[in-house]
Length: 550
Image (cartoon, rainbow, N blue to C red; front, top):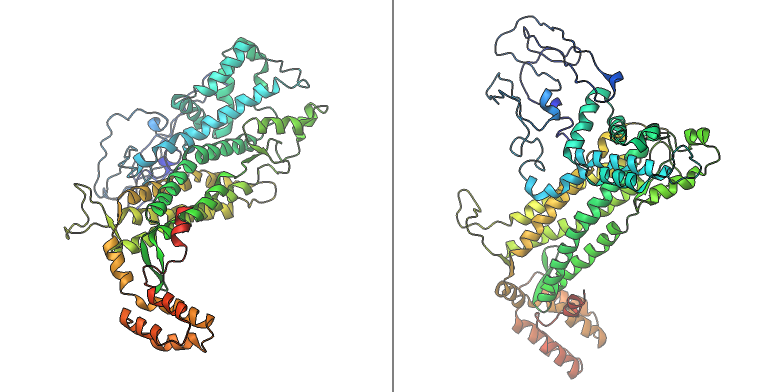
């Protein structure tokens, strides 16, 4: 969200700034001209007068520079400014152009290529695109309402024209909206003016220009836009990646269903399992949370300034505005929330991010377990030519994919938690605290998607090291204390648990010791035979069966 909307606010960090007077920090003795806005296209009443003034400060040493906050002429353009020297060094102002190298955040910098698919969804452009869509669909919807006689049904050609405005909206259109916003200082109003200008280019639409944004509050437009953004983010990006992860872990489960593995509870040897069964546990847990993410009901409202259709009913008291609004909201594939204030209360967003956070938490647990199994040698990582594990230790093959996944899942969940707890809270009928927070929705998706990509890369490099796993389980005969004392209970032997505790606890138990203990038991021969045939690698319960059916 800092690029590009607020990037002009954080252009450089410098030392020894002068006091902030009138919102502008200047080097003393420096003169600058105040910003002159461009004229407003097609709306002469908004033309601004180009003026300039000089601001002076007492002289200071040449090394004492200050931070200047202003909107640069190129801030709303794709063109790089002429004569930009990008000078560095102490005491020099740096006006560095935004790129993947200079972005403040890693999602737009170091990791940009991995999350670029989200740019069209959650960027400023993505939000403006959805706002334009909602505004145009509303005027189309009004034309179908019999009670709104002033907006008659449109011709097929005009409907096609309006559809094309939505379908062909591009970055250049979004830049035009931003240039208008530089004048209006209101993002949604700028979208309204953009739509009016486009509609005014068609003669059939000129008489109904003032029905653009009719009876709407900005949040009518915004809440549907946010719902559409979230819906696209979930359906087109998050769910497919979640499904890939679940499928890959499920494949690990079935492929390794029969490989015996020593369990560890509290870090100590415990009853054996199989490699596949442990993968199946994760796949099942992730599947549940994936279903909850996928079943999220995206909600919207379109009820005006405080949710009561006040302006609507003054203008057209005979119209069934709640039905009109419900049909309009539902037309986007979004559920209708009939009880709202100025804003849709965002409860469903909290539900969505809560489900995503639970999926991420389970995946983080998986990352840590795989990291630990790699440390034990249970998994080997296939090497990639050219990769370096350590700047000083050439032998290292680090589990960086799982570490990167874990780290980014933590960031994603921290953001998701804040949005989940903050967004449902708004003072009275509305305050503005949700607006700036909602601009960070894409970060939850970005850091989650970055983590999902990393974990898939990590899984793709894994090979099970059956030799190391077998060595561990074959040297853990103490884990058979559980089945031995269970058979002893069945056969009526007194204090079986206590006898096995005294025999095994804190001691290294060998195969020979366990056989000798079983042979001296006063139990039926068929039960004794069961125990004598048991080995740690065969004491697996139905682990393989569970792994195969996940």
